[in-house]
Image 1 (cartoon, rainbow, N blue to C red):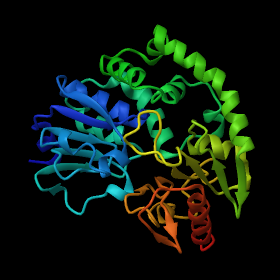
Image 2: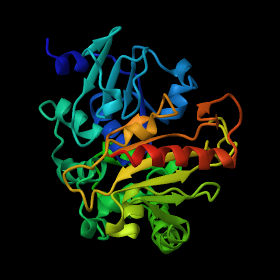
Image 3: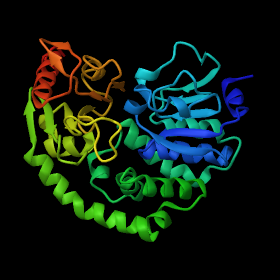
Image 4: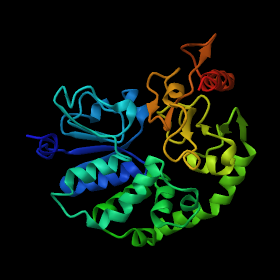
Length: 328
């Protein structure tokens, strides 16, 4: 029995997925095969910290997130999650070097159920998660692009989008649902504010753009930062989250760093494996060579220590990352 066939025989009752566009589309596709499965949104940090252990068993699929030893199905495309074996401890592992995790789910089910309504959506999920979107496309008005920008604004909005994708509602109709239209209008209005805040908190050192967004209650992906920085940067580092926060807090999350290649400039891949930065202090950090992340760690004398993160730790982490970056 091949690995796809083995995956499809599983009795999946829970789907734990990332709450971004890729994770949402992945879960929506799987729900068409396992319609009774409960969807739960997760975060790499929550998963690695053991905060979701009680939810995970052999009837659980984990998508676009770090693999858990107790899950029954793992679907992911991140380099840091590549397995040594296709099956580990009774877990079926679907790991492929695809642009998105959704593409793996799509490949798994495209011969079994009708997924033709997702053809255009899949192209944009691959572009966005795989770093192949052009700057003109990013600045454009594609509906999937805007859908991705409001996913994650709240669990309620994100779940509603997922359920409508599962039920084959066209993207333009999803965006016109009253509460989603309201969220979209607010996000469009917020775009100018985001651009201004990033410009005010952005600086470039050695062709690495650094956006300091900690404690500002906003997040940005690398596309917006590198679009603003332009051709003066080869990659960017985005500092976000809240100093002193923990994953247990609903409104805040631990101060973290995300790293992205300037894919507008380097269309076939970056000039440096950014996971070297993401895993330097945080053993749970990782992702792709061109898009990855980690938590800011408390360090004393370049060694991770066991205490609460303070502002000076951000500076120390950045200083060490710049030294590693300079060796490219």
